[in-house]
Length: 550
Image 1 (spheres, rainbow, N blue to C red):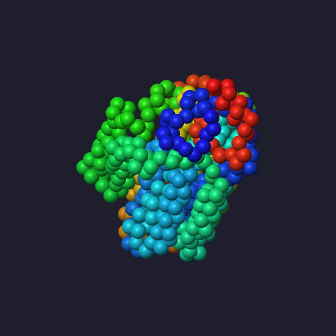
Image 2: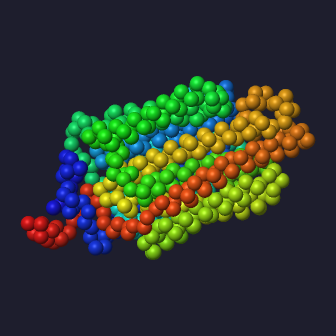
Image 3: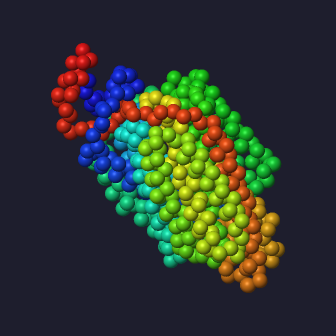
């Protein structure tokens, strides 16, 4: 049976034999590596943007007219929120419309959002641009992982996960430096404009070489397969939760109706989404099978936690260097090299070890243990700690988080059939994106509240609107007179200790839930519905396959 692009119903047109059987050693020819290159290029674009904004953020908030510093958290939250709202649906979209159209759509959205951010002269346009960017970035992140699962069996995927980890780490290494350099020179808008040529190249690259099957049913038939009620419930639930988290402790008190009402509505919406998906929907976005065993559930929880810890660390470590050590935005990006340059090799080593030893539990336990230790020692930093000490602690954190980040999808996918890959990965990437929102928002709230308690009264007298703290205050710290400056630096260091302790608690919970994993053999088969289309199929093998089936 020859697979072509005629896929009127991707759920039924392929029989179970063809969905799960794979050649004894599938060839990895020219188009395979072109697809891998397209995956890494697309992922690099999204990761570069995520990390570059972290060091430029204080300058962006300070330079846009009428941008309340208390709204700094929306710069990260809007990006992550849009991705979180789209990601649960990304698996269904990839199944219904095909991998390449969804990837191309994501790249176009990312480029459009970049234009809006670069041209923004108001808070509203900038945050709207970040929202559209997040939609595209979320799709890029999800589709890269789904396509990789289509091409590489789980048993071999550790090496490729390590390759993706390298891509992410290189972007994480140069992103803060690029963002800081542009911010220091007053050219932060080019941080977004520079995405356009890169996005255009990747768009052409994906359009020409990502030769994957595309369902050919009519648009009406495709739309009819989608779970619109589920989509509404998850988007509404996510938005309400993020609004509550963003307002809590900054705009309104945590006990206020403005915070509690959307939080309760959001949690209720997510619960209703889960109930609807598992009991009512005929085409669920999140099939119940995805959470039917404790190992997959443990993997999802670990995926959520490690992303919250990693992204929060990337966002708030530059705050320490800029506010406490006098680093420029560029300098704080360079100071993050200890983290970024450790994540890369450790991701490869962790991925290779999973492939070689055909197991994932020891690596995850070791990674989580290192992460807990790292967050513990980082919480001892103060404003006078040597810079070399803080960078050394970053190395330890990078080692732990690199191993854990690479490994968390293996317990998710190992107990499930390969036919569940797209939905399972879509949910996993959704949890990663939603974790960014929770991590950035919770840590931002902790920092804001601690600064309000720890900053000296003289600071409030000298700095206008100083109750709107954190990012809005960093740019002003080093223009303060000497006795006050040291007090403010120490206030930031003391406040950040609570952020590190928050991440320590998250890391410890990740280690705890990892003990629920069971050991499963890693799949050696693929879902044959999806994969690189070969220019010259082997006719002899095809005839033999037909004969054996007959």
